[in-house]
Image (cartoon, rainbow, N blue to C red; front, side):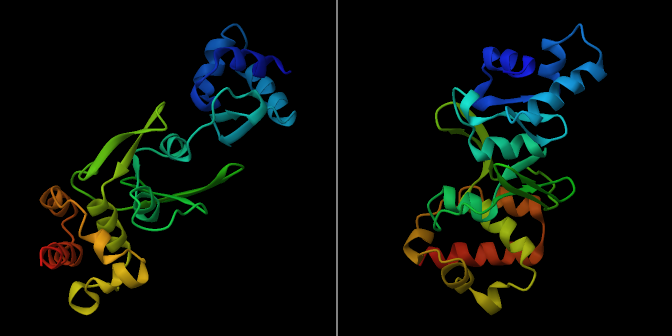
Length: 217
C-alpha cells in the first residue's frame, strides 16, 4: 500500500472522498513537489482515483463506505444543486437515470467524465440560486442540495427554449419526460412563487403557473 493510501485509509474519510487539503495536512512536513509525487504514485498504483485536480477518491477496496454520486457532484463543481432528470428520478417522477448525474449551477457550465461516472453542470441564471432547493440527507451519512420537483421542472424548462405552455401544455412532461399525470398531481407547489421570482424567465414562469392551475382541476 502506498504511503498516501495508508494514511487516507486510516483517516477513513466519508465515502473515501478527500481533497488536496487532506494531503497537505497529513504530510505537512513534505514539500508541495513531494506531495504531488505521493499522489502520482498512489494514482498510478490504482489505489486512488483522481476525479479532478485536487479531488480524489480511494479505490473501492480501500473504502469503508462508498460515496453517493450526488455527493461527488457537489464536490466537483460549486455552487450547484442536483436537478433536471437526476432530481426528477430522485423524487420518483421518472425512471431512474444512471447514465449521467445532472446538476444546475449559477457559475459556468461544465462537464466531468470520471472513472465513477459522468457529471454535467448547466448554468441557469437565478436571482436566488437556492430557490426551491433543499439540503437532503443521502443514504443516512451525507448531504446534498437537491431541487424540488417544481425547481427541477423549472430548470428543465429554462433549458428547453422551444417549450411553451400555450404550445405544449402538460404533454411536455407526460409525453416527452414520461411523468405520469397522477404523479404530477402529487407535486407540491408550495415553493412556486419562490422559484418564479428567482428565475424571472417569462416563458418558464408562464409554464409553471399554467401547470399549477392545470393540476388543481
